[in-house]
Image (tube, rainbow, N blue to C red):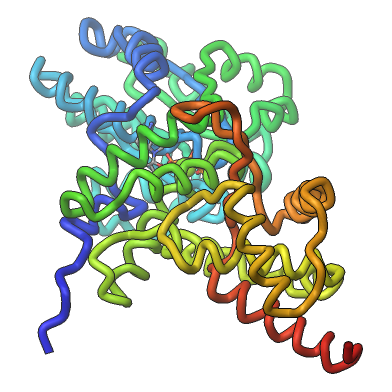
Length: 398
Ligand SMILES: Nc1ncnc2c1ncn2[C@@H]1O[C@H](COP(=O)(O)OP(=O)(O)OP(=O)(O)O)[C@@H](O)[C@H]1O
Ligand SMILES: [Mg+2]
């Protein structure tokens, strides 16, 4: 049976290992890194640089370091400088200095034996091979916390003071340490700390607008034209913003939502696909919250679920929800509550995190309250509420 075309053009662009060519809204930060390492292109052996990159989850630390590494390597090679950028994730090596160095040495000596050497010896071997090949290395220690936790100051000291005994030789190793919280470095002894703390690139959390740009950019690369509506992009950005301005969350949602669209042959990534993606990420922990709602809270929420189920939008207005609520009340044969009361319910549902409310300002006559459903697919919410309401009716026959 011929199935509908996939929404994806190139799924690899959503892979966690993909390094985007353009890092949107990080121009300043990448320029700062370039400045820190500018000497490389003119006098590569002159100094050894140390830089910290710090920022919360999904603020683009890894992507920034990798993009910078790829760029500077190309530039250096064009100038005949034998520069290697080596990116090692400390956590994946259980924070072990030995394993981290082994990984680094392996770049120059593939299949380097894992036994028979100490971390110190590996360091010496690294320096030696760089000397032999007249090479330079920028070593990025990603998830640096892990190394500090396991090895403490000493390992970091060894790495940063690598060159000190060889003052007459060119400086061949520079370090970029990537971590979430700069405070971690404060646990190190003062002299180690001082070698690290002078050059810091801080990444702020992305704003909603920045996330919209990042998602849109990735949509262009990974999806076929016109398969991802603006509403969907907005919803993803909003969810990722409330997850701490986390671009990783945004891209994961985008990918999963695309998968749901394909699974159902929709040909389009709808907001409902996004809601499913979220609910797959957070398994539903809200069922007990739903059960504790009173009758009219349940009816109002059911109405909201139905509006979402019946159309493809990411947002509905409070007015639409109220109309749907009136219909639901008729179905259940109860009197409707007032607008003021529903407004209070909306506050409550939003405080519980079941719905989210925002105020629309652009392109609308006046301001109106918008409702979105971040964490649960509308059909699932409806099913859950209907089950609860039927149980309630059975217990309290009218
Ligand atoms: N400015 C940006 N432009 C385009 N894509 C971005 C940008 N920032 C981050 N991304 C993408 O978002 C995802 C998460 O970024 P990244 O892995 O660099 O975050 P991180 O800060 O290292 O997170 P963690 O603290 O969890 O390691 C990646 O897929 C990355 O390509
Ligand atoms: Mg990272």
